[in-house]
View (cartoon, rainbow, N blue to C red):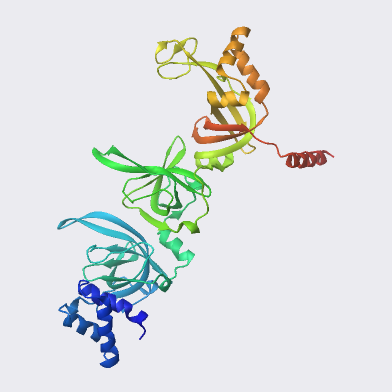
Length: 445
């Protein structure tokens, strides 16, 4: 037997002896038993443990070795060589009080299975590593087999290449029965969804929920289709830039903007970053308005379309100094007569060929698009003795212009609306426009 083959058995003996005996000494003893005395491996291990004052009964008795796909719902003692796909700590109530457990998914070449680790002092598992699990048992929960690791279980870390899990099984482990959805497909009201993405940011804050204080972890998650805000109601130890698959999550929307929520009943599985598409935090995705309309809203997206209307309320306006609402005829509808603060704004209707959106742009963007300043606009209005002259110039300069806008898209009974945080006149693709025109002309012939 090669040294590599006896290494896991040496480690198991060392573990039973509390790591008080050097592994090299155990290996030497083991070779003697195997090669000189020619006893079985199990006899050798029990003898060595006994010789060094340990309890041979603490050795794994060698449950029935099975693959994940071979597991039945009532296995009494089974050995599994598996990769740990996820590990989620959780506190549960037992007859003896509160107890810390770990739950998640295991997988081998044949399939994936959920597990619960009931004795964290006896067994320690690490996500992404391969372990030989001894003396596991199974139960049926919700019509599915579940592996349990109790006070008889033990685990030996093995080489990574001893278990190779293909992409299909990884996906099964990740989804765990829920619907797998890309970020761009998330909609208000969805339940039991599975989403894979990169954590772009994490902040924690204390909130009051159901009369009790609770820490919630919030931030932004992204995949190749877009970004979404999330709230984790359980500490999963999330860190920026790690790629995770979140299962059993649900979606709640605010004015149509979907937000991903997950808590104690959810699963979080960490994936290798190099297997995930490149996602840059600063690069939003361009989407069509029809696509956004279908899901009700979106976070940090690009929309390209043509300005088809400059709405009333655009141009030079005055705001309430207290609530910032637009003042009408010198009065705020909340605070009455006020001395308004001047401001510039564009409320444009943009059509991308699939639908239309109202885009609201503040002073900075308005000044950039109109190549003017607030002070110049006020001077212009004073000279003309008419505030509307500023909006008239917007109509002349921006109507029918292609525009690229970036921001969050909300929706209500009036349709889609974006609070724009960046905008620029979109470059025209001359070749594409010429081709489009030629097609139209030929269509008339």
